[in-house]
Length: 392
Ligand code: SF4
Image (cartoon, rainbow, N blue to C red; front, side, top):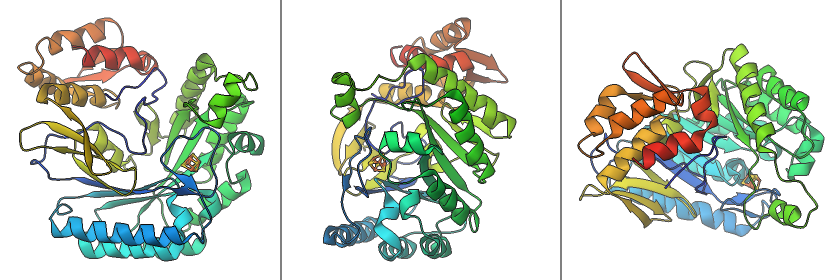
C-alpha cells in the first residue's frame, strides 16, 4: 500500500508513483512510463532501480533496442491507443544521449498518437543534458523536461554525491528554456549542512532560471545506501524531520509568492503547467510501465486493481481497496475529492463519509464547495490523513 508521511514522502520504492485506475475501460492505459536504469554515478542517498556505468557501455544500445521492441509490441496489442501522457524517467534518461533517445522517441511517434496535446516528459540531469539533446527531442515531440537539480549549492551537491555542480544546473535550465517553457526542477531539503537560507536560495534560483514547475522533496534515508551506512556508523546525522517540515513550509511561501500554486503535497506549478502524468497516477488512471524496474497498474477483467513490476503482477487490490486508495491519493492534491465521490464510495467502503467528516473535525481536511480538500496541517500530518482513509 502506498502511504506518505507528514512530509509527503512515499514509502513504496520505485521510480513511478503508485495510486491508480477506474475511469477507463479495463486494460486501457492512459499513461505510459519508460524506465532508463542507468546513471553517470550513484548518489549517496539513492536506492532506485539504476546502475552507474559509462555512456559507451554497449548494454545501453541493447537496452534501447529492447525497449523499441517492447514499444512496437505494445502498439500492436493496442495498449497505446488511449495514452495521453508519456514519461521517460530513471535513473537518468538524458544519460542515454541524443542518438539513443531519438531512436526511442521516434519509435514512439510511429507507435502512438503523439499529438501536440500529448504531454511528453523527459527526465534529465544537468551533467548529461546538452543543447543538441534538447533540440533533437523537442523537435520530435518531447514538450516537458524534468531536471534533477536537488540544490544550487555546490557543497550540498557534493554531500549528496551528485555528478554535477550548481553551474551545470544553471546552464541546463537555460538550455531547456531556450526551447521549452514547460520545465520542472526537483529540489531536495534536509541535505547535510543545508541551511534555511541556502534552501530559499535554491528555490529562488529555480524560479530565476524559469522553472514553471518545482517538486520539493525531503531527503529520505533508504536501507543499504551509503547514507544509511554513514548514519549507522555515526559518521552522519540523520535528517531532522522538524527542520524538513519547516523547509517544506518555507517552499510553500517562496514558490507561492512567485505565483506557483501547490497543487499536490510536494508539487508546485504555474497554472496550466501541472504534471498531467503524475495527476494520472494520483487519480486512478491505469498506466503501462516498460523497461527494467518499471512499475505499471491496470484494472483486470475481474475488477481487481493490479500493480505490476517488470510486467509481473506484484499486488492485487479489491475494488474497495482501490476505491480507498483513490480517495487517499485524491487527498494528496489540493483539489481533494468531490463530496459526491465520497458518497458514491459508501457501498464499497461503509463509513467513509463519516470518516471524511472526522478528518474535517480534526483539522486535517476542509469541506467547501462540494469538495473535501487537505489542509496544510493534513499535508504536514500525511501519515494520519492518508492512514485514516486507508484504514476506514
Ligand atoms: S541520478 Fe537519480 S537515479 Fe541516478 S543515482 Fe542519483 S538519485 Fe539515483
